[in-house]
Amino acid sequence: MKDKIGFNLVFAILAFPIGLALFKDINFETFTFKKPALDTLYLITFCAMIFFMLKKKEKKTDN
Image 1 (cartoon, rainbow, N blue to C red):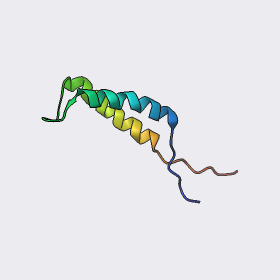
Image 2 (tube, rainbow, N blue to C red):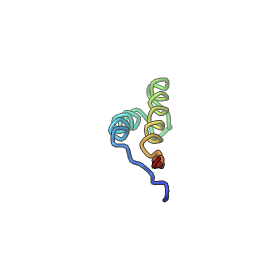
Image 3 (cartoon, helix red, strand yellow):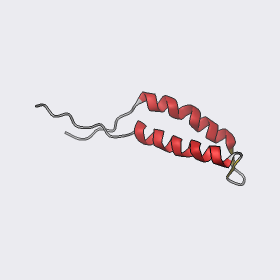
Image 4 (cartoon, one colour):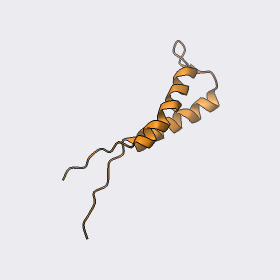
C-alpha cells in the first residue's frame, strides 16, 4: 500500500493564527519584520506546524 500524506486538523488550527500573525508583522516592501525576535520564533513554529500537519501517516502492521 502507498504511504498517504496525513492531514492533522489540530496542527492546521494552530498554524492558522501563527501564520496570520506573521503575515501582519512582515513588511513586504523591505521584507523585514516589525519585531524580529518574536517573528523569528513565529516563523520556526509555523514551519514546524506545517511539517507536522502534512506528515506522512505510518503504516499499521497487523500482528
